Length: 280
Length: 280
Image (tube, rainbow over all chains, first blue to last red; front, side, top):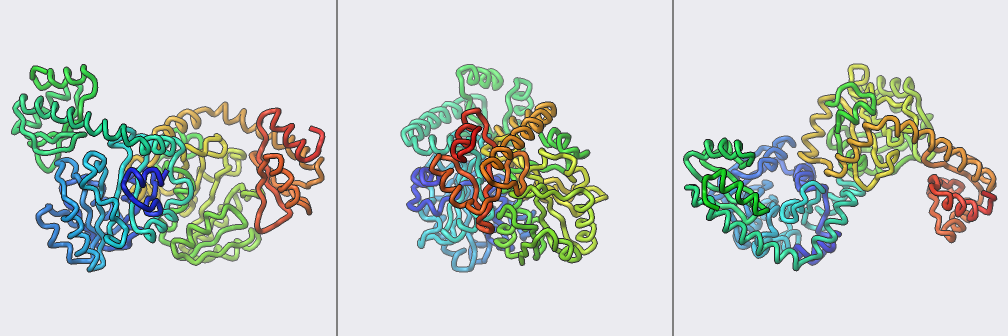
């Protein structure tokens, strides 16, 4: 399966691709694997990254994107989620390589969490991670998001052959379930489905934007799997949606934001439009 | 699911029971969790135990059962597989508690791998592990052996509330798959099936012993899921069985031993009898 996944990730050597029981499982092991005592996370983002380093006893700094470069001349483990969750911010490959090169020169490591990397493959740096061009770059990939099967627990670490080998020993034999193997083998081999799904998700994301705009919110970002919308009364809208049985995601760091997943069936679109008091 | 499993393991507080993606996954993390630099394993046994400590940089000693007590007055992590694989040797609860008490007094930990613990529940010390009676005892339980579903990747660590909490953080959210949750919930709640299966396995193990004895081998040990048999010509028998499409398990440390799993269907029993040149 690692070979099939490597081809989907555009990675030339499957020895650099390690299957794990989900990205969450993998990222919790990175502090023990990399043995670096200070970590920087570009944030706000998925909170497990900073929690993992904190729990492992590392000094942890969460910093805005604009200040990342200031931390790249140290021997730290720097984590960038790309595209980011929830705002969808994307760094291009040149920016990521520049961060990597500076970190690498100072004994640091750049971790790029590409949990949503399937949505926009041209920004992925998976092909370079762990090669001579980017030896201190580590990529996380997630099966559950794009392929819609979070419950099978499948994710990947892409890294240098040396880091990959140490991770395999830390995971032990049989790191993923038979169901995860079967699902991964089928899904990663089906490049046509992936391309069709990218287009379908793009259309659905544009449709969701129209609905959110019509309800009086502005679009603050997102990917084509989720949209981040802003309104001064976002907390009241959250409660209103809940009363219709619809869960949007509020954020502690900004009370004007709500993250929306894509509705699937025609009836789901109607329910959301109804809850937002918009004509569908 | 941890509550249902705790009841099946006779553990009073589910906070001491941590679900993992298999015992193998869990035991590889123990060196990082316990932070002990020297380990002793009662062996020969399942080789991942010593490998895990070795890979984590610990000093590792594999020692016969008879010499275990000599190592219990040190601050080491001692692993005992009980019942043992492949010979089925069983330590009773008093022996395990005595080892624990000595280790605990010296800052050490006793790890009891009860991968086959369902077969003989009266020898389990899961009820005591991590309680005031045995604070430095850690138990490993495996779902895949007794319940026959190794591919779902499900295992448990039973330990003090403090060690359990640290393990939960190291595993992160969603440590096991939805399939593992469903299988575990159903299986551990069905105590009647477990009792019936113990009796069925016991009958099959006795039947397998008769077949192996009739073929000229002696019984060197085992549990009711596998039997360990001895013959001077065990390697030739291994090759003979292979030519019939039957895989027995040879061992590097003793060329006269073969481990046999239980045949299931009537036709499997006939095939084994035929390969062993015995009347079924």
